[in-house]
Amino acid sequence: MATVHQAALPAAVAVSGGADSVMLAVHAAQVARETGIPLHLFHVHHGLFEQADAWAQAVRRLGDTLGLPVHILHVQVPTDAGTGIEAAARQARYAALAGAAGALGVRHILLAHHRDDQAETVLLRLLRGAGPAGLAAMSPRTERDGLVYLRPWLDVPRDVIRAEAAAYAAREGWAPVQDPSNADARYTRAALRNLLVPALNARWPGWQAIVARHARLAEEAAQILDEVASQDLAALEPSETGDSFSLARWRQLSPPRQAQVLRYWLGRQGARMPTEARLAELLKQLRQLHSLGHDRQLVWNHARHTVRCVRGRVSVGLRG
Image 1 (cartoon, rainbow, N blue to C red):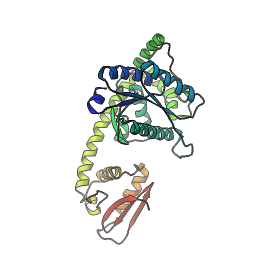
Image 2: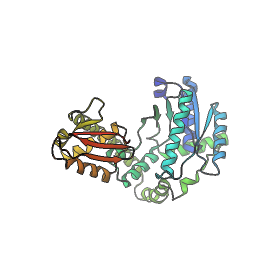
Image 3: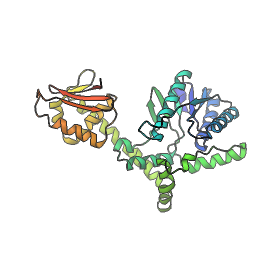
Image 4: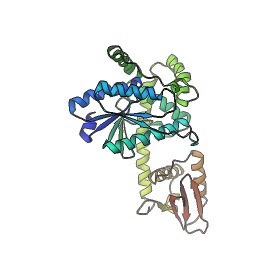
């Protein structure tokens, strides 16, 4: 909260009604009272479960107890988006938080992710074949949609939070809401948490701290890779807007740096990050363009963007 106080006011806490987010709200409320920071509670109502209304009411009661304003953010989660219900719900949630924050002048939002969440995220990214940037998992501070998201508890174990939540519940007569998706193996994270994590706990106690440390190291590696890619891109004779570069210069890089600078360039231009297979396809086509000024043109469509190569310049733009 000190970071929030120094940077911008007011702030908000995203509260699901579960033990983790409720305890974060309790701690944040105390700091807000001591520092005079206006604090809001944001609850996203996905409408995916019949208990959703009861969860919203539980967060309203928490707001009354803490003397904080509560904002219930209703969203519609598309079930046919092609990305899966978990990803669709996450996108809808961030959009709702951004909208509410903009209306209230909120710049910082606190999230209750803890060390166990971080460790699980690293495992999920690893199983999906993520590179160093993906394995860095969640950052204590990220920016998205013009907002700063803070995760102050990434180094705090779940057991510590739950023990404090139990004491708070006994003292205040409060009970956390229970999301049934957390026990439903149809959901990817729930499957990992209920099928794989118990085995890891039994064989390697404390594995979460080791995996969380790996995430920090991966984040450092990802930052170094970005620095190298930035330097490489600057040497490719980029256009003023950065949306094109010299194919001849790019071909002088080693194959790993060719791939890395493409990822970096696409990310800087707002394009969706391609899978390894899709990137390999683009790399193959670019490497087959043998000479500057060759009359063969490349057109590589990817989601909302198109990569072209015309007269020795590789460019990216939105699809027409």
